[in-house]
Length: 245
Image (cartoon, rainbow, N blue to C red):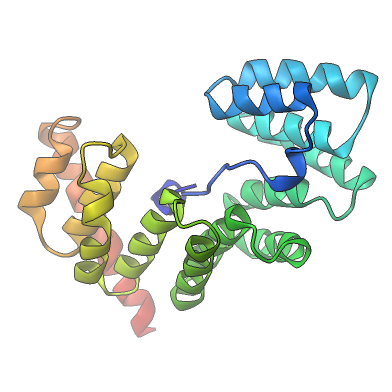
């Protein structure tokens, strides 16, 4: 998942990749996971709920939680993850899911949950990426960048961790280095809308406003574009103030 999503709530990207424990070879759960990854959380929820009603398991409940979270129903997702942990207290998927939910309101607690998940699987890239977000949200950028680096080492193709690393670098006073890191990823033809906007944020923080505006202009115009650029610059100013305190 991208870091900027949580910033003013932040503006930061928590990755929702499935954990290894859910790839158990159960066709129905795998079908639900495929639906979730393909943008069909409602279909995934229906499948997982049906499985859970007949064969209750931590995996089915975690799948329900992931689908509910994707549908914007965090309270129900919280309950599903908690019930999954009753059945399997060391469930990486449920701990990861709860950790993601807590990023929005309690990043310290999110970090605790993600460290518990990491104790079960120290190379789970999705956990490491979200751990980085939790640490960034607490202003501990150097530790966050270490977590993103470990996520990339565990899964070199994880774009979310690469984007988050660049955003964290920008927030910690290295916007030019962050732009150099992000340009090859977010400046390509296959870049997503979110990645292009993240690159624009980094460029704006580096003072490269014209380049940032060019990236944002297909999606934002006029006052909306000016507000976005001002917000990115203010974000860097706020991070500088925090470092000086």
